[in-house]
Image 1 (tube, rainbow over the protein chains, first blue to last red):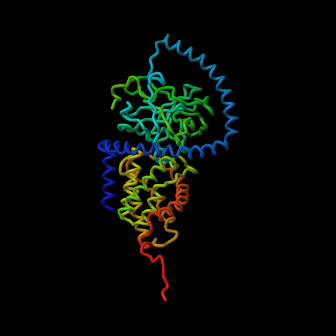
Image 2 (cartoon, each protein chain N blue to C red):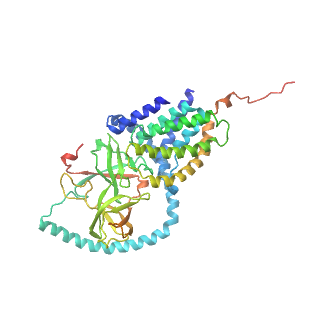
Length: 276
Length: 173
C-alpha cells in the first residue's frame, strides 16, 4: 500500500513537472482509444434516447423561440451583408493590417471527442494529435462556436482545455457593440462564462447579444484566438454601484458537456515561436 | 486469487469505459455518478485492503491515461479509497448490510474533498463552489449505483467465507 502511494506520488511529480512520461501516456492512450471509440458507439443509442426524451418535453417552447429567432436573424443577415461589403471595401482602401482571422487563415482537422468534461476537470481528450499537424495552443471549435484550446499533444491524441476551465481566458467582443471588448472567463455556474472588464460606459450590451472572439493584431503577443469565432450569447447583464465593470453572463453556443466531435484550427502560416 | 485479479481488471476496465462514454455526460443537479469509484468500493469491501489498493491504483492509472491527465493524480486517490474501504470490509463492516452504502457515501465525500485538496496542492485552478454544491447529488447518485453494483460484485467475488460454508446438510439416521 505504501509502495503504491509512493509510486503514485512519484508519477504525479514527474508528470506534473516534466513531459518525460508523455510518450508512455501517449502510447497507453493510443492503445485505449479503440475501446473508448467502441464504448462511445455502444453508449450512443442510450445517450440519444435520453436526449430525445429531454428534447420532447422542450420541443414546443423551443420551436416557438426558434421561429422568432429565425425571423430576427433573417433581418439581421440582410443588414450585415451590406455592412460586410462596405467593410471589405474600406479595408482595401485603408490598407488595414490585422491578425489572422477565422476561417480564411486556418485549415480544419476533424476529431472525435473521446472523453467528457467533469465538474473539476473542464477538459476533453480528442482523437487527433501531433501526427495530424496539431500543436499546443491550437484553437478548437465546432460548427456552433468556440470550444477551447489544445493543452497537451501526443502522437494521435490531444487534450483540449475548454473555455469553461478556470485557467482559460479569451479576449472577446459584443457583436452588437464592437467597442464592448472584454475578457471571457469561467462563470460561477456549470457551462457558464463571464465577460469581464467591460466598463459601465457600454450600456448597449444587452440580453441576447452575440459574443465573438476579438482576436488581436499580428505579432509575437497576438491572441491565440482568431477574430470572429462565435462564443455565446449574453444571458444576463447586471451592474452594481461599487463595481467598476459590468457583470455580463454569457451562455456558450456549444453544449460543452456533451461534445461528440470538434474541429481543430491549424494556422495556414504557423508563427515560428508557436511551433512546439 | 489469480482469477479474482483478472475479473477485477475486466470489471474496472469496463467501468472506466462506461464512465467515459455515459456517466460523465450527465450531471443531474450538478452531480456526476462515479461508477469506477463505486465498483472499486464494492470490490475492496469483498476482497480486502491490499487487493483494493492495487485495484484502485490500476483503475486510477487507466483513468489518468484515458484523460491524458496528470499521471498519478487519480491513482493516489483511488489507492487510498481502495485501501480504506478494504480495511473497513476486513474489520467492522463484516456481514453488515449497510456496509456498501456507508462506504459509498463516506468515500464519495472524501474522494471529492481529496480531489479538491490535491488540485489545490498542485496549483491547479479549480471551481470549488460548483463542485461542492454538486457533491450531495454525486453522493446520492453513487448510492443509487451502489445497490446493483455491489450485488453484481458479490456474485463475481463471493466472500471468501461463503465458499467454505456448508451448502447442504444430509440427515442421517
